[in-house]
Image (cartoon, rainbow, N blue to C red; front, side, top):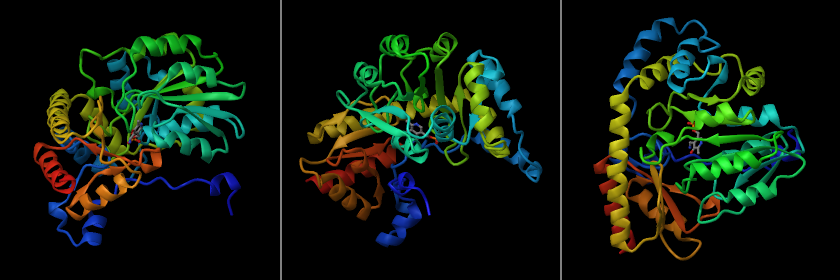
Length: 364
Ligand code: PMP
């Protein structure tokens, strides 16, 4: 039924759900450890759970189509007017909106090799040309991306930190890039993992939004804020871009529970700090174990690590299957062109220990 460019889309493979793995491998779901989707192992903040309870009585009505309360808190937090904020059903919605708003079928969208698969997906879904620029050291090669800009390029996706590699672009390099990008090309800086950055390397992307009229910064509540299941994210941009995005946005794209939970999560500094601390400790533990096992990994600034589990192109699939049999779900990254590697999300201490124990048994 669909046009050729739709039929050519390879379906996105999300992390396997616990129930599916339990059924497939005859395991007790309670004993399964899922470190596959870069979720927050602390779950949802208790403050957000409470906020959701309070709005349950009103969910017979539509949510606020403009997300006034959430935008109010965001506008104070990021020091921008509410007219600079676009709310999304997860930040994937913002990425998709950007493609649908700024790009027309046949035009091109740039992104890096080894960057988030959704960039290629949203390009394909609108019949645009997705141009993948070769990466350097598993990260973005911004100068190569600049050179790859063509007359028909309308959008560039940059992830900082990047998924699945965890690489981090220095703010000074991003700024140089933004200075040089043609002004008719919209740049999306996808900062899904920003809240995990060490304070020593945190940077102020809002200042860039104020400076560059063609910049859209996207953020999510799915990671450090622990609301992946509720689906809420947002974009920051000058009103010219925001206005266009909001014309294309579905009117009620962020549900009432998600809006209330996001307000609570934004105000819950304790939860955010706890999430970052557990992540930093887990990162040290996991990378220490990889070093001890002599496994190569890519230093990561996110809540996950990419680890090389063998030398042949079957390694990722093979080790992943052995892990599944032991009740550990991680993410194979074959679809990213990394068949020797697995991406593991950083979990709670006991989850990380279970993963390392299983991996050691498999690699022994
Ligand atoms: N951007 C990046 C780089 C991601 O890794 C993810 C989640 N995997 C997202 C965006 C989308 O997350 P969400 O839609 O849950 O906000």
